[in-house]
Image (cartoon, rainbow, N blue to C red; front, side, top):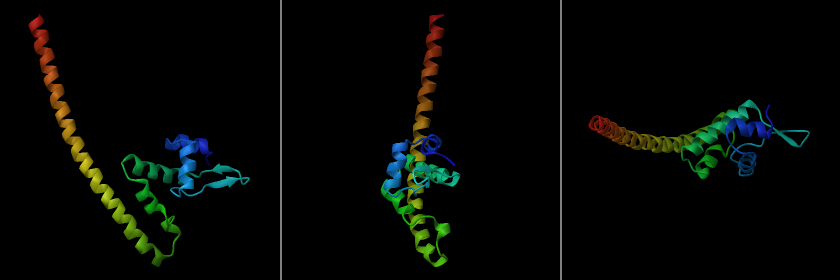
Length: 132
């Protein structure tokens, strides 16, 4: 079990952000010790890390809220999860398409940068040879 400070450290978020995410319904409320201090489980931390990965890769908080709004699928009745799964699947598929597009753009940028570095290295070698 983790305090809010420990959960923040493990997830890379601030305590303030964790409280904000709780208030906004992005992450579930953690258990409380003595009705006061937050007590995050390993499962809570892993879920927060999943949310962070979505946010870091550009998913909007609106879409993240849509994915998590009905809580954990494992806690739902079988008939109720079908619509939830379809909705979550559509959001994640859209996000995955966006990520693949970004990856393609990054691959192009990496190629251009590598070519530019190659030119600079060649120019440095030619400059050193001319100086000798």
